[in-house]
Amino acid sequence: MAEDLAQAVETADIPALMQQIGEQARGAARVLATASAERKHAALTAAAQALIAQREAIFNANALDMVAGEEKGLSPAMLDRLKLDENRLRGIASGLRAIADQTDPVGAVIAEWDRPTGLHIKRVRTPLGVVGVIFESRPNVTADAGALCLKSGNAAILRGGSESFHSSRAIHACLMEGLEAAGLPRTAIQLVPTRDRAAVGEMLGNMTQYIDVIIPRGGKGLVGRVQAEARVPVFAHLEGICHIYLDAAADPQKARQVVLNAKMRRTGICGAAECLLIDRAIAEGLGRQVVADLLDAGCEVRGDAAVAALDARVNAAAPEDFGQEFLDKIIAARVVDGVGEAIDHIRRFGSQHTEAVLTEDDAVAARFFAELDSAILMRNASTQFADGGEFGMGAEIGIATGKMHARGPVGAEQLTTFKYLVEGDGTVRA
Image (cartoon, rainbow, N blue to C red):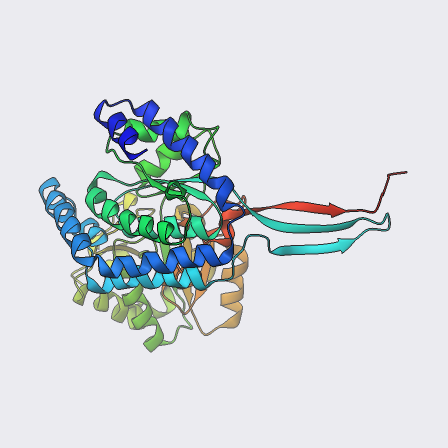
């Protein structure tokens, strides 16, 4: 099997390669649909152990990707996304164990009722089938996506970006160890073994008989292409344009630490704050302090005239800075007249990912929560908590901002659908 794939890659027969991967995934999905919770748990815990045992090989592979990324001119934020170290690798392993320890969603009864006709009806969770995941520079997605698909009884076809090619292969090898240890098919989690972009085209347009849903994880260009070309359903967000509204009733200590964390903890993730909205009533006081905190931390603040008046170091914002996902040490900022104007701004420029309000006023928070329709809304908390692991899901494949099926962090439960089980006793319809 491996020899066949290698031959397909060498001969650049991408359609044949992808068809074979699709057939193998469909076969594995049938096995996974009825795999016991114990076997899936065993596979994930064994994979977590393999990650730690093989860390030197993983770090060596990651070093190759880092050198290539620097030569390619990746931004510091993108290089940060790509980099693996001891703490991050242990975090990935912990994520696998957390997913393993969750309640298995497959077969769970969502609802159950009886009808006057004598029918007993249950709605139960069932796997989607085969999940295709297309991602860019974050090698941890290999582990997160593979593990969540396995936990939810789905076969996975993973196509990582060229930037993380070596790292993803090293992590994938550990997932294979886990599958083998649990007696599950190696084809349950497949990593596309080529950097040829034609493989993406095959997944999007020519594998409808194999792939049930596509999940893109990456920049606007990737996600936009997937949404435009995919012939199967897509769980996606185009951008993480996250806003923070600093209300007149914000607690100064909470506000200062939350804003700084939301922007600067990790600037290259989709939950990083990209726009700060300051209530005019506190602009000269708390607003000035918050802007200074960001500037002192090395963040470029691009503000409107009112924000620029708060600190000489602020750069004038261009119109396109609002609605921009910087993924860097840059934030747009403007002064607004209360929560209503803040809501209007977010509706115009947001991407329905994550928004936060900093306030001690319950009425302001209630209005913010009621009138905005982003997938995640927060009060007095950093937008960097927009993460499946922080939501108790172990990990996530991504944050879905659409309104059909999955929304917000996509964990194992969100990778299931449902079916109805109906029982009668010779029951006929009148």
